[in-house]
Length: 358
Image (cartoon, rainbow, N blue to C red):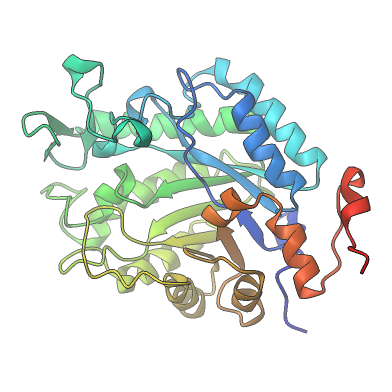
């Protein structure tokens, strides 16, 4: 019998109660990287709502790795206690807590979206940002600096330290953010990566940073804990990162101990040819899964219970990552189970609402 949206999934020693994942969604609501009551309620309500895996927003491994001053962080030990409060709550309510570790690269030092989202120069309270290569910023005078060898090693060390803190905070799934035009993606894509050393040029060189990160962080994780990697499976640009390269990368990462490829797209540039529509990114998860055998997560305009279930029952992906739909309805999993006729447990406090009498 084929799995469905509400069938459990075991990855290493972690069992997810269903295939619904709360996709990382930036909240821009931290001060100095600290989680607070907003994050507890935001993430906790999705665990109460029935998701199988709840992943934090992109969580910065260093202060300069933040997208905005409001980003969540995990670059110092003081961040850990409140994160532990959140993971404890998530686990008490049957979900698994995951964290997405990130460095924003040249997309760092920007305003919160509702403040305009523009680049913040150093003289206006921003900070120096870094990339695979030098990049002219939005003010047309500031430049992101190309990381030196020492800088690359510092990034790797920051990710390793973040892994240790994430484990102390109680997270059981780790996702490395290598998508959406942030630092790791800036090394992967030839649209940004113009280096002439061993981190630039060939496919093998451009993936080097990500492969090194996986080699360094996988041994830190308990053997039974899953490691996810989010990639942009295509840049949607001529001469950019390609779906074929994503398949090659996924096969390599699988052999390195990565368990799931979270398949998004784009984010590095602003192409006009993206065929945005319901489920438009699902074929990338399907292709990577079919060609490499690695587990994949599908993401992008998955908005209905029937659509989400079809992704799983058809074998196109192993997980569905929901973002905006779970902003609209934190209890989507409970509603979807009812709509699809699957039995699922509700929080005892909510059971009286499980069946509507007609």
